[in-house]
Length: 123
Image (cartoon, rainbow, N blue to C red):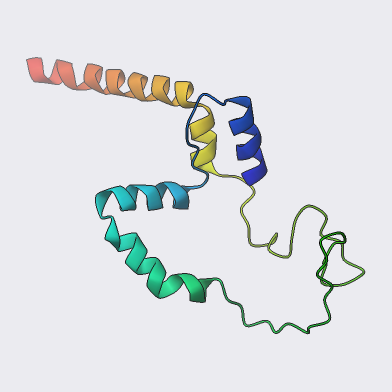
């Protein structure tokens, strides 16, 4: 999901910012509505949410030039040990890539709703 967003940003450099994922968009919106609230929430929960109960054996290789996979038999490639819990797609990012289509659909919905409501007012 992140790689697709980076490629889209590179293909469309006219935009200043790209948000990827609903949680990012929600965080930005919350920060605009109540600036201190997301900071306080993350100060209480941010560190703990990044921790795991799995213990580290201390034998894993961590080298810049070689992959640091957990087991020699398992190669994560370009993914990672988090791959099972990550989301492959984001509706928010897909809608952001097709802003013209979303605008046209929203305009059509408003016009359609107006056409349904308007005749009822004339009665």
